[in-house]
Image (tube, rainbow, N blue to C red):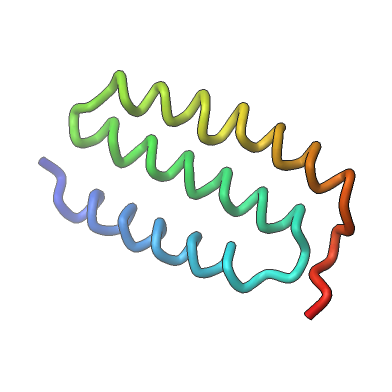
Length: 81
């Protein structure tokens, strides 16, 4: 395996999760979570779980992102705190 690539993707996963937790704008948080899901799918594909990676990319980054953007459009875009 390409351990340095897997380790760097895992580090980017942690960074994306921390950014998603720290941003105040909900659309930015949804975009960051979609990036997180895409990075997770890439990491799963590198590990050999291509079927799980395809499902993660389709559902995690695609459908969930669209549903979350729809939900954010109904409520306030900024967090109160």
